[in-house]
Image (cartoon, rainbow, N blue to C red; front, side, top):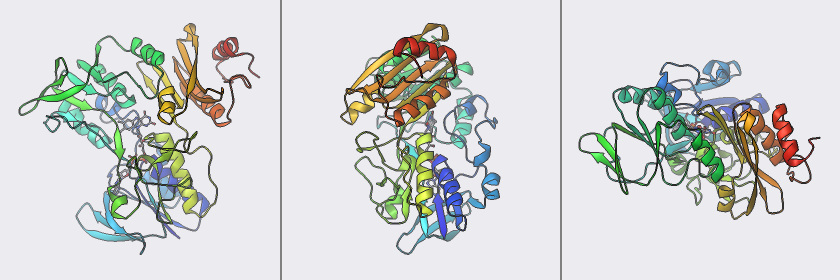
Length: 426
Ligand SMILES: Cc1cc2nc3c(=O)[nH]c(=O)nc-3n(C[C@H](O)[C@H](O)[C@H](O)COP(=O)(O)OP(=O)(O)OC[C@H]3O[C@@H](n4cnc5c(N)ncnc54)[C@H](O)[C@@H]3O)c2cc1C
């Protein structure tokens, strides 16, 4: 059996490993436009400060590691179309030569593309988005002489970019329409993170109206001020990249991602879609949602790889969200739903807060009205990722705050804190 995967991000790589493991006799091939090794996108702004850093490369994702497991990675090729009924793709290489890739099972992991508000001036030189390491390296050159820099958007990528540019000595302005990490953090958690943000990152709660400049960016115009800028970066999210899926005739859902079922199978049997290009399902309600999150792409990739290998297994954790980043010396962890994302799918919530000043730790635990844990957020000086996984486990096992103590952290101070707050930990 020939399993072809388009995309070399976390979704594509996880799909390739799962397919290889579960269908040992199959041929597994990954096709990607990228010319370099696969790399993490979270933390990609590291390359603004250290363009030659190799820290973004994950050894298990390298072409060598994959080829040792008999997974072929073909870099620098674009899949431009094909025929899913006749089971082939049209592929163009970097020299413009056309080829065909035949498959029995196909997995699309084509990611997302940055979305930029359609306001005047967004096409001026000096306006940037970041999606790949190549983008970041290119921008780092252009940014050398640019200051101040305005970053629009205060999601993880906007915040980490602000921190990196500040480290480079730039005057940084962060423009956000409502609040920092609005869909991921409760309002008091958001406020706490801002309190820990360096004072010389200038936060503007404003809505961008246009980008100023004639031949080059000179500033960002908001409703009541113009912020001077030598560069403006839009870190305002992504939309699913579905042009290939549409050419292949796959159905696209109401939110603009490829429609898939719980096995990640699209409207065409034997063709799967995962990661930022696909519509995920909300864990509580089953409603379609977009979740452009690396860990979710990897889980969905593992599911698609298993499905393409002919396995009936459906993993229960595919649609869970876990995001973790270290910002301004703080571990920021968001697992499952926030009250905002839950409200978007019509679920009412209650939020319980816990605090441990000696560890600079603040946590928000999100439950349904009935008390079932559906999300947790933590700001802490250390151990964030461990705590994040522990919360995720508890969400998965459907605990309530009354029935079962919430966390069983290895971190003893956190244990004490949570015992004080929530009762003895088993
Ligand atoms: C700056 C930035 C910061 C981020 N920070 C975080 C974070 O802190 N936490 C988090 O969880 N997530 C974060 N993300 C999101 C996360 O990186 C994505 O959710 C994840 O990479 C999606 O994985 P994917 O496999 O779906 O697609 P991608 O990783 O986007 O990979 C898409 C792949 O498809 C290939 N491709 C697309 N079209 C074609 C074609 N026609 N032919 C051949 N190849 C094609 C591309 O070359 C690429 O290899 C961040 C993203 C960015 C850009």
